[in-house]
Length: 153
Image (cartoon, rainbow, N blue to C red; front, side, top):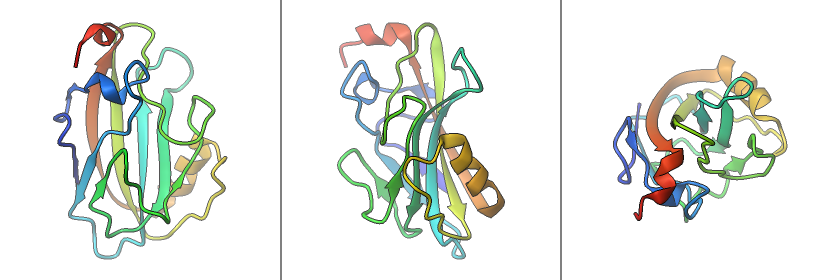
């Protein structure tokens, strides 16, 4: 399985529009080579560099149909469920690092089931529900730093 974005390359800087300093838009993701046996997809955007706790969840979405090939700021399949983030709100909450440069890992999971979880399920609980059902996964990492707020893009 593969995940990529036309907005940034793996392990490169994310444009400001995808941060809370910019437009707080979901970056476009292209998903390919999903295993035939997948029943659904899930996406988690996680910042392992967050200074407090065990990282920070910026986006948690599940029950995405397995034939989905693209997710954008303007498009998320109707059956998908966006959950609560570490910001405490539903949907995407982009980067806003207090200092330094952080990594934002967009991991797409192919699952052997659908989850049917309530949208307010905490991110760690969603990850626990996903874990035993993972068939395959792919990660795209974007970087964003506190000084990137001054970037005019």
